[in-house]
Amino acid sequence: MGEAAGVQGDAATCHSGDVGEGRVGKTTIVANIGMCLARLEFKVVAIDCDVGLRNLDLLLGMEARVFHTVQDVLAGEARLDQALVRDKRVPNFELLCISKPRSKIDLNFSGKSLILLVEALREREEGCPDFILLDCPAGIEAGFITAITPANEAIIVTTPDVTCLRDADRVAGLLECDGITNVSLLVNRVQADLIKQGQMMSVGDVREMLGLPLLGVIPEDTATIGASNQGMPLVLKKPPTMAGLAMEAAAWRLAQGEQMDVVVLPEEKKGFLAF
Image (cartoon, rainbow, N blue to C red):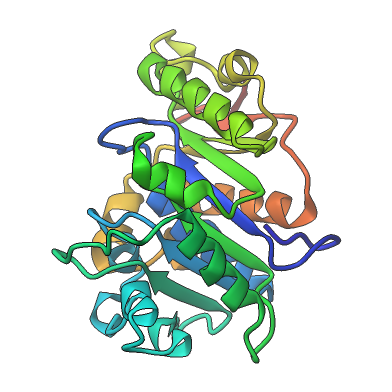
């Protein structure tokens, strides 16, 4: 993953810590952080690597503009620039989908294919992307292994509940076995009032349990559902929401290669609660 003061165009993986159905918000995080980075003048390419359950285009409101996919490029039926879909709102952001809905993936598609794709993106005439974000499928099956192949950094997205944390720990171990040691943590859907009541684990406990540097903490926000249904990334909504601002802060840390040390979330009707 490209940094403001580092190597540009490196590939990174954004992966859910929830093995199975997902639902921790990893695709939402990819869409919003990618859009934030593009607004910071970075060139961003987001790749939806979830072959069976493609959703990134829907969250971005770009589903009607996806005519070609990576499968078409590999089959020689389209050029790479035809498969890339540029966002009209933030031109620095481009989307690339592996396959079309309800289509069968080529059995020859593998991690090596994804490596070649990333290399082709780096060698484009338009210039090397600053960030290549790979939205991994949930689980630790073949799709996950394929998606992490070209990555040298990873973001594990999880929620503060014990089942997701166990899965996140498992994913972190698999990433390390694959040689990806630069792994950071993003805790999503945090509710300060539940933490105060002892019904939800604190972010400090989550970080201590997983032993990973903290990239960001995203509070639960009902506006997320409406934004997703409208195909409008939360960070583009006006006025800004708490979750949108938290995602912007996480994107800034990612660009600067920093981590989060102090966790502060709003508590309803009582100002701010630090934990």
